[in-house]
Image 1: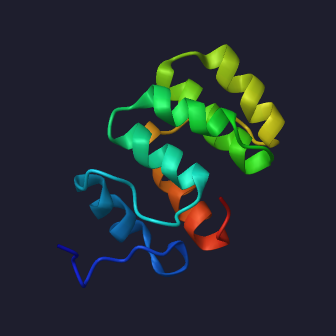
Image 2 (image 1 turned 45 degrees about the horizontal axis):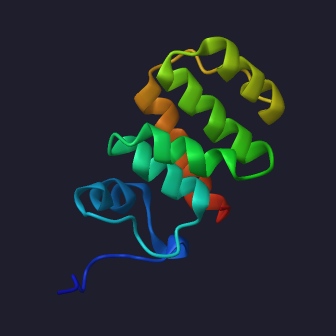
Image 3 (image 1 turned 90 degrees about the horizontal axis):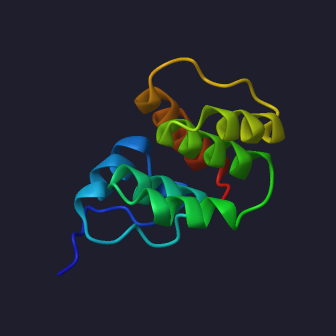
Length: 111
């Protein structure tokens, strides 16, 4: 059964709807690989998130990859990926970094 109020397209989904999607068994359709990685990480599947992030190219992918290694506690590896992303390592809470990445990806429409 589908939920008529559920948003499944990245271009119309907002961060609140994305967070609400975490209660479902599968990621929303058509959200892009990097959002899918963040979705899996938030549900506790770091390995799947890392596999997805590692397969993607570009600075935004490197930022997600960096976040994952920071979350893992591997700061040396995280710093490598932050450098590739051309960003400084976030010093704040991991949850805030996750939220910022989700918002950035939803806003930009990037995979």
